[in-house]
Each structure stands twice: as C-alpha cells, then as structure tokens.
Length: 552
Ligand SMILES: Cc1cc2nc3c(=O)[nH]c(=O)nc-3n(C[C@H](O)[C@H](O)[C@H](O)COP(=O)(O)OP(=O)(O)OC[C@H]3O[C@@H](n4cnc5c(N)ncnc54)[C@H](O)[C@@H]3O)c2cc1C
Image (tube, rainbow, N blue to C red):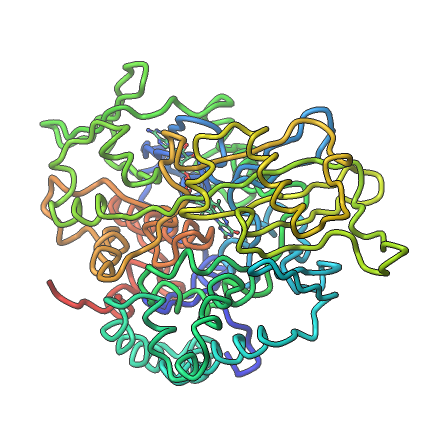
C-alpha cells in the first residue's frame, strides 16, 4: 500500500482487509472432509445472510436459509406498477466506492453502477438548499455560496482540530494497523460517551460562528444532508463514516440493488467444493428459502433447534442470525441461554433510527429542461428543513419514465408521516415542495401509484438501521466480537450474529458484508476448518486486530 491508495472500509475498530481476503488466490479457507454437506441455518435472506450462505456453500457446507419476507431485506428495489423496470430504492440506495467488500460481490455478478445524484454532485444538474423559507439555487458542483462554504470549512477544521483527521485518515489509506490503532483507540476513549452535537458545539471552529451555522450544518450536513437526525448519536459513529469515506464517491446500482442479494441466490460459483457444478443457493433450496423463524432453542443433545412459523423444527450445529436484533426478543421465541446476559444487554439496547421514503414515477426527467424564462432547471435535488428533508431525482434515460424521491427523512420527520397512507404523504410532500418551487406543478407529471415505506412499521424490521448512542461502544464490541467463540461456555456456542447493526458501521451495506464474513470465519472454525496460512481470516487475525476493550 502506498499514499496513492484510496480510502477503503479498513477498520478503524477492526482493521482487517476484507477486500484482500476475498480476492486472494488461496481462497477463504476449507473445512475437513467429514464436515462437507453439514447444514448451517441462516436466519434472514438479506445481504448478510446471502453473503454468508454463498461463501458457506462454496466451502462445501449446506446453508439452509430462513426468510420471513422477501429476499433482499433492506436492499429492496420496488417496481412501479405499469412500467417495465422503473424502481424505487426503499432501503440502501447509494453505495460509496470505499465499500470494497460490497463491490466485490457487485463485480462478481457483473452489476453496473453509476454516480448517485446527490446534492452538489456532478450527477445532479442542480441543487437547491432551502432553509427558513429561503431557497438557494446552485448548478452542478458549485461554487458553494456563503454561509454554506463557511459551514463546510468549519466542519473540516472541527475534524482536524479534534481528531488529527488527516493523519488518522492517512493511516487508513496506508493500512498502517499500529498507527491506526494508536490514534483510533484514543478517540474511542475520548468520544464514545459524547454526542455528534457535542463535537460540533465544542469545536473551536463552530464556536467562532453563530448558532445559525450549527443549524445549517444540521440541515445540510457534509454532503447528503439530514445530519441533525444524527446529532444525538455517539460521535464515534460519525467519525467512522467520514474516516472511511462512506459519504463520498457514492454510486447507485443500475436496475436496483436488490439484484445483488437475488443474484447471489441464483449464482452458481465456479470454484465450489463438494457440490456439483451448477449448484446455487436457489438450487440447494429448490427455489425458495424456508419460512420465517419463530423459535430458537438449545436441545439436550447440544444441537440448536430452529422452528419455523409453520411449526417445522430442524436441528443444527450452527445457526447464523442476521435479522435485526430486537426481533430475537419480539418475533422469535429465543432461548435466553443461547446468549450471555451481557450480550442480551447489547442486543436489546440497540437503538434503531426511523426512516421514511416516498417516491413517485413521472412522465420524463423534466428537471433537465431549462425554464426558458429563468434559464434555470425547474426542479433540483433539494435539501430542506421542511418535512421533505431530502428530494432526489432519478433520470432513467429518454425512453423511460423518471422517478422522484419526494422525501427521504429520518427520526422525527419520519415519525410525522408514520400513520399516513401513501396518497396523504405525497400530498404533504407536494405541498412542501410548492413553497420552494411555486411555479412548478409536479403533480401533472406523476404517473402510476406512489411507493412509500416506513421501516419502523414493518414487524420484520422495526426500524431502518442502528444509530448507536453515547456509551454504546461496549455493546457494539460485544456484538461484533461474538464470532470469536472458543472462550464461550459450550451452551452459548454455535449461534452467530451478522448484519450491519452487528458491525461498527450500521446503516451501511458494507457492515453487513464484513460481519457476514466474520461469521463465516467463525463457522468455518467450528467445523474444524481454517483459512490458509497465506490468507488468514478474521478468526486467525483477531488477536492482532481486536477492537479496543474498554472494560466494564
Ligand atoms: C432507509 C434505508 C436507507 C439505507 N441507505 C443505505 C445506503 O444508502 N447505503 C448503504 O450502504 N446502506 C444503506 N442502508 C443499509 C443497508 O440497506 C443495510 O445495511 C443492509 O441492507 C443490511 O443487510 P442485512 O442482511 O444486515 O439486514 P436485512 O437486510 O435487514 O436482512 C435481514 C433479513 O432477516 C429477515 N428476517 C427478519 N425476521 C426474520 C425471521 N423471524 N425469520 C427469518 N428471517 C427474518 C428480514 O426479512 C430480512 O430479509 C439503508 C437502509 C435503510 C433501511
């Protein structure tokens, strides 16, 4: 690695090079002959479940997937009725290029991506920032006018003065584990119990500016907007986002990101052990996962019994749970003895953020046609303090209807619309947008039915994603490190956890991939396997890379 290397999702808590592990010619590892064909239950056919199942199948084990809803989980690309292939991305929609584990699988399946039309990104013809009733119009990538430029500058200064950011990020870039650990571990101790808002308010850079500048920062954030929703979160969570450039270089998956989990389900890998050529997860399951899980229990024999919602019970030596952790309490009757009470504390204290999106399909990308009177584009990617919060424009090309995400909001803004049906949500959003664009009638362009989602109202999710609160580092560490099972009492072994909320970077698909690979490594060891010496995995590297232990 040299200084020209890009920033990737390398650490900072567990600086393991997942991308190198995945692409190494020696492969991820092997299990002994005797273990070939052994069944492993996987709860959840989202990205984490699918990545783990795909790699377990390649090792020659037999993943048995359970899913309560639809394949893909929170990677859900919903098709508009009446159009061939026009979609609304209801969950994950923009994927930073630093997410190297995620793109490993995107590339494996040959999926295409393109720059996401973020505010002030080259892929957005124009951006409007609408605060306190004053819309500011900006074309392309700028220049960014005052006072926004001052806020952007203050954020950069706040990061530098309080975290030595450039040097910290350089350690990520160089993959210098010793340097990164020294720097990051100090920040863990310093910032775990303090909020994002505290970081901003306490910084010399923002202290020099007005309260209004902090408000602007909350609305506009450092790129994609809406950061005041994260103000109560632990500052560590925000630092990880900026450090590993999760807010930069974002792309969308052409045709919908749901193709990723669905593609892994259908893909027949070349280098597969034990199974005949042409085997896929779909073929191993005769085309559909098992039903949702209703009960998990340890039996006298030591096996873990998995009972589905229709009452069928099957027994496994290893079970991987990738559903949101609250569901282990609310949707699944989970034998308490499967996890230590300290781990239950972490699982149950997980704090979910709410999120809502409302989309409409429109006849054409009319926002690319300049208004002859003003010379401006008539509608822009819009960040607002109104109920819409974020409005995004998707141009599907000249021969396709286009899509507007009228509103992407979080927390209290998402809760405001929680009980409302889709038509009412659309009406509210159009009313808000009319204040910003008084001369534009968006509704005359709308075709088909709107699509909306509130993740917190879905009993299969209960929230959009984790947002760790101050003091949650220890909980995060307990969940993340649980794949290391050799020191656990025997009655707590054999059940694994994965998913973005098990990672230190919740709300990002890369966290789902990385924790799925941790679980894979743990399961491989449980069955007597290991990674090759020239390509050690998360289990083999754990002692050298383990996240800082703050003690209780
Ligand atoms: C609104 C929103 C926006 C997002 N934006 C981005 C983004 O821009 N970029 C990005 O990288 N990430 C984003 N994410 C995060 C990304 O979508 C997730 O990290 C990823 O999809 C999580 O995958 P997972 O497998 O961990 O969990 P999930 O996708 O939640 O999969 C868990 C699965 O378990 C299933 N399940 C639940 N209960 C049971 C049961 N009892 N039995 C069997 N199965 C069960 C669920 O149905 C689900 O399919 C976003 C998420 C949301 C919600």
